[in-house]
Length: 126
Image (tube, rainbow, N blue to C red; front, side, top):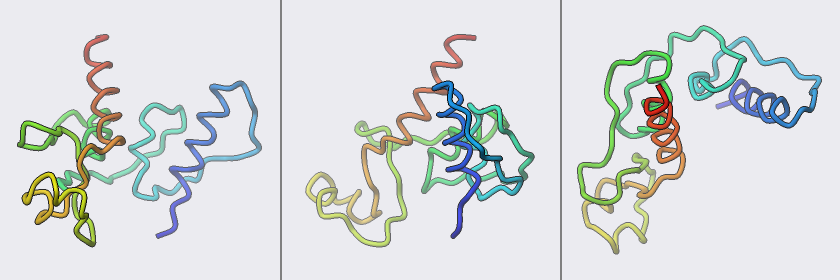
């Protein structure tokens, strides 16, 4: 799928933080990842309310807009972060746990961990 909103807003936000002016305008159409830019000043209206167990980082990011719903972590002791729904089994996960292998789960997902950290840091600051 073509995704133009998220990478453009990410570039604009990074440039703004670095004091650089870019000759770019954020698209006005949500590419499905608009709520992942909750930290940015380039907000657009989006009806995209996704409570997805497979991609939990989306829920954590969306919670900044709509504080309701599920904030998912693995129900195992370790790791807390993950991404599911892989098209294929990952051999590394199979060595760790048959559960991860069968469910096609990528464990220790950095994006999920980042969204969890940013959300919890914001809650702690308020």
